[in-house]
Length: 162
Image 1 (cartoon, rainbow, N blue to C red):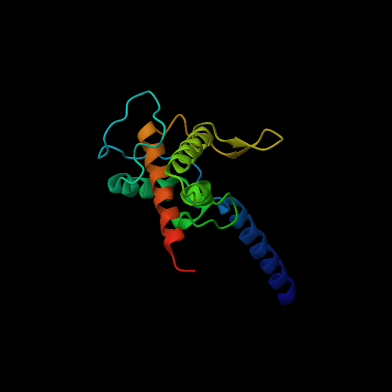
Image 2 (cartoon, rainbow, N blue to C red):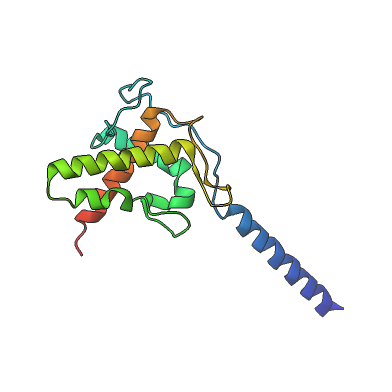
């Protein structure tokens, strides 16, 4: 009888453990507003390329926004854990271009791509959202602050000795 209770307890424990992992797999995916009150306002019309790129205050604001909205899937410090695409790769190729003109054009294109995915989300072939849409939560300032953070992280990773 004691062995039977132990087996039932073990099975129940494993079931609950796996259920908890499934629930927490992507962390909290509820969009959270980003406090951008310390940044210069950008207005309603979208600006390309990212006007906050290289702005240290925007990078700091973006780091907090990233932590609350993106890290659950894209990894802490923008270091992908394999659940979702590696955001550091978005601008890595651009930053490696020799020509400033090519680099600027590439960064503008990646900013536009990033903005579109963040605002409208990403669906798989079956129409299910792989990433939620943030257009009802994020302002232009929030989108560009988070992108400024991931761009800064990309530069850090490129600068690391190999």
